[in-house]
Image (cartoon, rainbow, N blue to C red; front, side, top):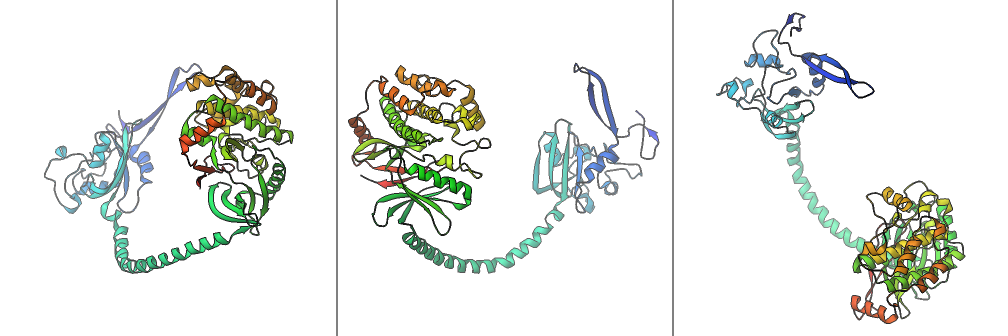
Length: 535
C-alpha cells in the first residue's frame, strides 16, 4: 500500500504501525473498529528514545525474528559498517536483523559468516523464545560491540523491547570504585582489628551493667528478677515483694504504646478488677508508675499452661475435663458480670490450668477487663474495624456488628467457642482473612463439634456448646450461673476427678510435675513461655 515517506513522497514498503480497538453496542456486539496509524520511525521511535542514556545506551523494539521495529540510534554508524545502504533515505526499521557478527564491526573488523548465517544476539534469542531477562555479564549487540542489557517480551503485542549499553560505559564507575576500595581496604582491615577488640570489651561491660541494673531495679515494693514474657504492650517479669518475699509477676506497660486517656481508664479497670476475689480469677496485687513514666501492675505468679498450649501440645481434651474447665471459668465470670465487668477477650490463651494449693487442673482466668480498658485511641488489641476489639476467632456476632450492645452474653459466646476448641482442637470458624472469620461468626451456623472431632460427644454437652454459639444473645444461656448449672447437669461419660488430673499431670509432665508459666500480653497473637521450675 503506497504511503508517504519521510519526504512526503508516495511509495510502497514504508514502515507503519496500526493499533485498533473494537466499538461495541449495548449488546456487546462489535459494530465498528477504531484504528490509529502511527509512523514507527517518528512516533514509536520517539517513545523508545526517552530510554536512551549516556553516549551508547539505547532502547529498541524487535519482533520474534529479530527484525528491528523502531529506528536504531546508530543508523549512521550502520551505514559506515555496511549493515545499511549508504543512502539518505535508508533506515534500520524492518531492514536490520539483530544478529551477532562475532566481531566488533565498529573497530573495522569483518565477520567470517554471511549476515544470514549469523545467529541472533543473546537478547534477541531470548525474545524469540518468549523470555524476558537481564544480562550484566556481557554479550555482543548487532554491531558486535560488547554490551549489557535487559529485555521484555510483550506477548499481547507480539514483539519485545530491548535496552542495552556498551559494556565499557556501563562498568566505568565500577573501575573507579574498585580502585578506591583497594585504597581503603588496608585501613579498614587495621581498623576492624582494633574495633573487634574494643567491641569485646564493651560487650563484657554491657553484660555486667545490664545484670547490675536488673539486680538493682525496683518498682515500688517489687524487685524485678528475670523476664518471663514480652509482647506488643510491654514485658512481664518474675519478681518478689521486697518485704513479704512473695513471688509475683510484674507487667510493665510501654509508655509509647499508650496515652494518658488509656492509662487513666486502665487504672480504673485495675482498681475494679482487684476487687474480684473469686479463686478462678487471677489476683492483682498492686499497680503504679515509675519516675520514667512506665506503668506497671503486679499479679500472682502462676504455674501452669494456657488452654491454647494444652490443645496445641496434647490435642483435643476429654469431655469430662472440658466440662470441669468450663464450670470453673463460669464461676469467675459470674462474679465479674455481677460487678459490671465484661471480659470481652475470652480465648484459650487467656485461660490457664494450674497446680494451686495441692489442687490440680485449677483454672485461672487472665486479663479481666484489661482489653476493655485499653481500647482507647491507641488500643493494643486486634483492630478489624474502628473501635472493634477482641480476638476474631472467639468474637461474638454482636461484638462485630454492634459493639455498643455487648453484654455478659458475649462472654458466654466466646466461652462456648473455647469449649468447641477444647473438644475438637480447632476454632469454630476459620478463614483466609480476619474479615472472612468475622463474617462467618455473623451469618454461618457452626458445624457440630462431633462432626469436626470425628468422634462421639455427649449430646447434652454438644447442645450446650451450640447454644452458647447462637447468633442471637437471647438464644444463649442468659448468665454464667445458668450456664454452669447446665454444665453440671450435663451427662458426660464420667466425672473429671482429682485422681484423673493427677494421673494426667504425672503421665505428661513426670512425677516431679514440672510446669511452665505463660503470661499473654494484650493484643499479642502469640504467647511467651518460660520455664518456672519443678514442684
